[in-house]
Image (cartoon, rainbow, N blue to C red):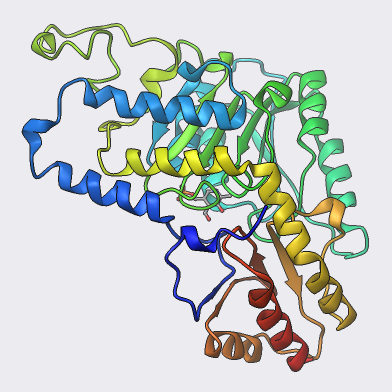
Length: 388
Ligand SMILES: Cc1ncc(COP(=O)(O)O)c(C=O)c1O
């Protein structure tokens, strides 16, 4: 794959290495958003069918991206925390097995994947959170962390909630092994793929999670405020977070909306958020998914890997610590500073050169995507080397 910088309208003097915080919009996505915004200036051009058709296209494209054979299992929501709140509500009501007590999480997980489970602990008897913290020892850190996670999944595990690329430092968790362990112990698998999908190959048929959620504004290259979710069979006939008019059977028959309807529409439709037919965001998500389907996440991962490789070597030779290649993603990873290097000095120099990264704990979080070129990483690495 070649560099896709021309698809975006980033300023030429900016080195944007921060997709883990937020992606820029591709020009086609930008245009779709502007067109969507202006559509409401002629509201009479929006038909009742449009309340459904846009979302159906987005569901199908997302299903294609993750190899989900049934797009009716996809729902649209505003955020990851909304998705987690939805599954918390359902698990609290449905999981009555008293021997299942543990909610297994990894340490320093993103808050949207933590607070919801605190609520489940309140709602459900005899339930606790088991946190598998990152090893303190840096040697083989990712490998040991993966092993410890697998060990923590036992017959007592109610569910595992995992972000396969850790949001803070890019540690990669082996989804196939986690899924196998969940299957053997009868645990639910909940995936937050926000830092993963779009830049990493994912096959839903292979992993078969019970629930997967992914915000669109990072690696899916979409707008803020649109999140996609997949609901597995465990959640069939479940309880939506909110009771929307559009989620009920025959909601496309506008003249009959006042014949209140007790039944929901098919599949995961009930889980869609209220006002899911977002006329600005959905065309943007559609265009972004089209780009990813064309570029292919596997190729994007390869692009990031090839681009990052020589600079990772340079930084490691200068005393910076980066996880082994097999236990971190190529599209985002943490860089820990040698003891003598001060984070605030690096921050100052990077910001003076308009290099955008993020800072999480005592590490720099570097993101690489298709708009980046070797020069971006050269500027970044030279600043780190000069601070050593
Ligand atoms: C792993 C992960 N999940 C979710 C989110 C966003 O959560 P929410 O959509 O609840 O704001 C982020 C944002 O950084 C994230 O890194």
